[in-house]
Amino acid sequence: MAAGVRLVVLGKQGAGKGTQCVRLSHRYAVPHISTGDMLRAAVRAQTPLGIEAASLMTTGELLPDELIIRMVSERLSERDARSRGFVLDGFPRTVVQAEMLEEILNESHKLHCVVNLEVPTDEVLQRLVSRRTCVDCGGIYSTASPPIQGWTCDTCGGEVIQRPDDTAEAIMTRLQAYERETLPLIDFYSSRGLLETIDGSKAPDDVLRSTVDAVERRKREME
Ligand code: ADP
Ligand code: ZN
Image (tube, rainbow, N blue to C red; front, side, top):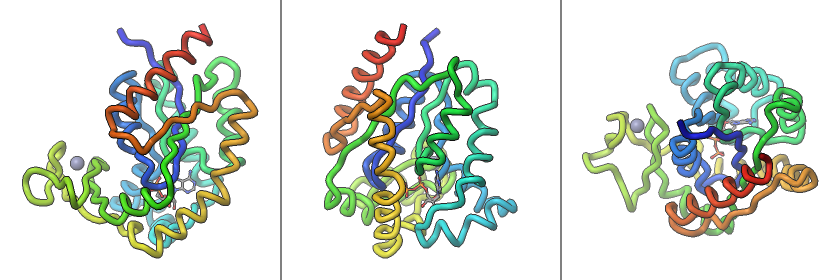
């Protein structure tokens, strides 16, 4: 059986986190834990959490740390994540969340590394305005590479749409929140010796290969 992994993936909106996290989760047979996907599912299901989250998400603001931490720690306590590990996508996003994650994971389940996907801002802006997303599985498409059959997801048959927060205005708010709240995590993880910076402007296959190389090196070092 393939060995698992414990990874955090950082990167601005449109850096390719979602795409790479799906591939990494298959590669290591661990759950892909995306706070954005979990929240969008809650919004669609109209749960109390979803109702609370919807308006902040549409404007591109971050949700309160306590709410996110509760949601993620519940998910991390499930059996698959405890035994095999995880790829975390969209969490942590603030230093408070990163500190909480350290507490949850404690000594025996430390992260193997934190992957930082670097892509210039003008390129992510271009990617985001043309991005289209499957409402059911989070699959990523673009106006340049749509699904095979109309706007129906190739993987799950779900409806492929433009996310309500992929508008020019919400994108600016999200990028500002990233600089303000999430950029400090680069220093946080670099000072712990965990950061691996990967050039995310290459083709998805190349980005995956560089990331897996870095993760494998880390895993060997930790053995
Ligand atoms: P993106 O990174 O492309 O902005 P995500 O799909 O990761 O989008 O998240 C969508 C929205 O969900 C965010 O704009 C924010 O409102 C909320 N969200 C997701 N993860 C977090 C988090 N860790 N802390 C606070 N809010 C979050
Ligand atoms: Zn789908």
